[in-house]
Image (cartoon, rainbow over all chains, first blue to last red; front, side, top):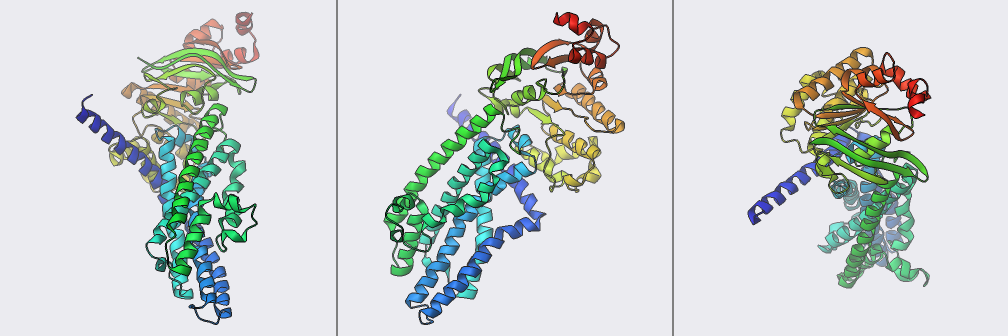
Length: 283
Length: 248
């Protein structure tokens, strides 16, 4: 095959792959378009969490003298920023696992897995949906924080995007781990989709520095990208500085965890095809 | 070229032999029935042909592609329908067909859906959610989905299960027409012996995972000295009549 022919074949394969990914993305967009409870669910918890922690932050703010410039204000800002950013991880994770579960609930996985859609394309679809769900879920809460609690998340500056990406990627590898469990244990593992990420929260150090944890627990926290992101967030809030070392560690840890998660996903998908679990995954 | 070539296919689950060393070929343009009682290995065989299940031993070649190495090239040219696998219920018929048109890389999706809507009388159903359709309407939609990519090989798992005679006949006629016009091969698992006699030019009889007999419906009926395929099926399932002599 000549170089030009190989390029044309690669471009054609890429276009075909993009069409298949769009097909499954469209399936989810069509679903949300005619299901307001699903749309409500996306924004419900981030908004609720923000309201609860926003009032708590207000309380701290007033306890600190009623000024956002005082220590109370910084604590309040840390709480609200922590809630908003942690929702990025939670929504990112739920966006993947929930979308996969939708296929199980609708008993549609059989059709999807016998179509030419590759497993990597299915994962890409889940990630695309995850980004959409995360943005739709978190933006209203960001707006409420701004209008009701006078907290501007975008005030963190461009570094906010790095926090966002790191937490989203963390949500993805946690989600791929949960989908692997769904391949292994079927829909019986569904409850993990809702609970596993919440279990990580104490180690993510969203509202307190890692040093607050007992010494034996700190290495576990530092193995999570989230702990480094929130250390970086506190540096940005308290010192108006960018903790590049923390962000670099978060990115490196995300790379490692994502590689592990993709390997586990691939292994569990292969094992599911051997055990016949793709046929009975809904049970 | 054969649409399907299966060699020594075996599937073992923790000591249970679900499919036991079966071999067969389905020529392009042929219509083959896969018959057997519950637990005979029909669904397991179809699942392996679709790449959902990895065989314990043996090989499967579909449309010239080795399913162990290149299943996606084969999957793009085949399709599948089963009443036991649903289409998303909240999506309209049109949305469902668009989804699968894209998943199967159909070029002119709008045109193809229009063709299928006319062929299967789906015009008035296109804007209705799939979950609100009757069993017969769902079957017609599932059939349209299974033909969206002009498949060269169609695998069907009990295509007329729980349908009234009129809708069942509609589906059988549609399958005959598609096979004749397109030259596609069809493999169908069914418990409706009259349907198999009408549609299939070759039949595989499975029992406890083994391929116990095969041939044209007429040849099988003659071999077992029976009046129809249903009696042959019962002989094989119960090991009575000529089936006992063959087994001996």
